[in-house]
Image (cartoon, rainbow, N blue to C red):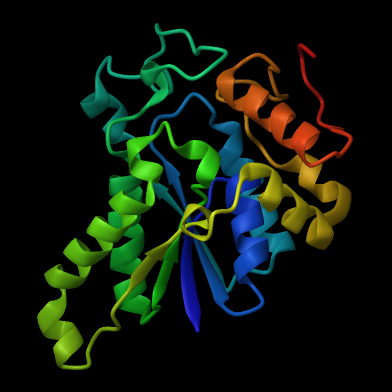
Length: 224
């Protein structure tokens, strides 16, 4: 079976692949959408090789940065990234954009699973909740319903660790079992930096996940 995975190179997406790869051939898709954290693109390429993806595509949708205007801190250069959750880090329907493109590839590859790394600690993000992925699954399958009925397309399911009740620390343990210390090479930081800043919301969530998993965090941070 084939799975198309939205893949950023972060803990969540890397560990999602670790969870799925025993049952699926993995096709990874990474998006360059004008994010400050462009280091994640290189990390995603690195892990696509380590995890032996069947294919990995990096898709340039940088035009989205212009469309997002001043709505969020991840793409707007003059907005500071907060150290804890604030709605300024919610990029408008980012996962809907990613998952729609990933699903187009899945329909083309006759894959039956589209996955992304949303987990139960992502409750604050509307487009990470299982209700969202269920509704989007229904809409996308409806958009290809005639092809599905004719046997030209496979019906897809959008899946996330959140649906299984998995937390970030749960994922971390799964990923570490497979990758060992390579897990510390994943990328979480929202800032435009070559090492983790250690201060942004995502870095703080990373630190917390290691603590909750009772694991020593060997990530290099600018600010500890």
